[in-house]
Image (tube, rainbow, N blue to C red; front, side):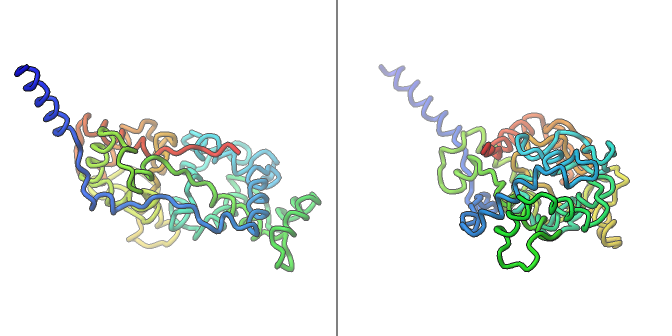
Length: 318
């Protein structure tokens, strides 16, 4: 009996030792996803429905073979899984196509932040000669207007506009739809107070994620998407792409890129602006080296990835 009690006490002590205590200060760096109430506004539903149709519309491309979904596939966590996406006549861009999931949460759009929101971003690829390659805004509108059902949908979606079917409203409709593409995960449940939403391993990974310095850039509701950061902040990263400096022309913006979201990161490889890294463990290792000046052990990387996997949400297949 005495031996049994001693063994029981040892097991209890081991369980206590295994419990991961996560400081509230660590949690406070993040916010759970919440659904924007305006999404459920009946007045907005016609616009969202139109935007979804346009998202899959190949008429928005010069050759009639590319839609938004071609590069940002909704059944694949908003990416196409390629280093560089194929555009008009199979041309390749020079940056990896980021996920459209949760993009409406970002402070700016594109890797260099050249679009202020998803409504503006949606129009960029349509006119880009490498991507969808349409010749003019007039050509875009003319193609869509040729379909009477589109004319009717735009009239319902933008009832207060004198000219409902406009180039800008194409972007506004697609943007309205993209704002519905949010993917809450069990990490959100944890942030809301459900301690059992994460396992001990996942909590340990969360602690390691914060204490390693990852959360200095990957924080907030999107765990990224809220700031620019120099790629190669501590250790230079070899790239010819100068990032935001190509837009601003400022030396201080050289190699500055928007910090990507980590939501669904296990599903959105390849990684980085150049799509050069296929595997998540390698991405974590390289970011620690180049951005934090840290050499993470294999065990530390494994722990961090256990946490990162909690950021994977469920896709809406409707």
